[in-house]
Amino acid sequence: MTWPTQAGTAELTAMRRIRGFEEWVRELSLAKQIVGSVHLCIGQEAIPVGACAVLEPQDAVFATYRGHGWALARAVPMVGAFAELLGRATGLNGGRGGSAYFTAPRYGFYGENSIVAGGLPIAIGAALAARYDGSGRVTVVAFGDGATNQGAFHEAMNFAAAFALPVVFVCENNGYSELTPIADMVGEPDLWRRAEGYGMPGERIDGNSVDAVRNAMARSVRQARSGDGPSFVEAMTERLVGHYIGDAEQYRMPGEVESAWRREPIGRLQRELIGAGMSEEDCTAAIAAADAEVASAANEALAAPMAAVEDVREHLYA
Image: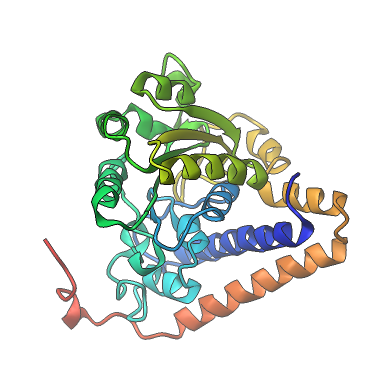
């Protein structure tokens, strides 16, 4: 552990905010107050929190459809995020985007994408633009392990390497390509090794350690910002819930989820902070404060008016 207790407390709070947000989203979805496809990042919170800790305001983040955590880690307002998922007029996109497509570019969050690997070529466009607009922008694009078997992934990696673009590829490897173990779908399950074939550095890290994520991303972002091109970070993690809300998870081995809960990032960080001298009471207080913030944001969003049907065609571009 290389961070001071104060920084660790901030990261504990940030991860708990994401966890609490996702727990509320799950319950609201089951209650049919959130409609449409919803994918949760419960268990993967350390990756967006650690990654976004080293980004600048001008940097751009592109996420998958499991991207709520990335949005919150980029300081997207929680009330607006809840309202968007709930179809409220006060949502980030007026209630039009829902869970799968919301975006908040003023916070450096350029949205989710329901097409597997679909965000990678879009992120490459943002990285290419940064070569000419003088912004000093670094692009981070997050995707799941299954996306590494899509053609768009390979094209994006090759293009980024060929033109030394300022982009960091972050693979959130939770072990499953939707419902199938990624190891059953590839000849080499160490996905980070693919980076060498494109001429860029790659590494595998512990994605349940916010410290490991932050340190690895700091290296990669520094490389990109200095003009030395892209890199690939494979962050190993485990999702503690189904691929989607309603997933029966019959593909899981007996005891697998229970075992994963013992390694999840929030409890792990709590133990590390206590070991570094933080009191259990302070840890509990930080988590309670995060939970209270989430509950307040959810209730405020629930009280907002629904998006008007008459306005459904406004703010749409094709």
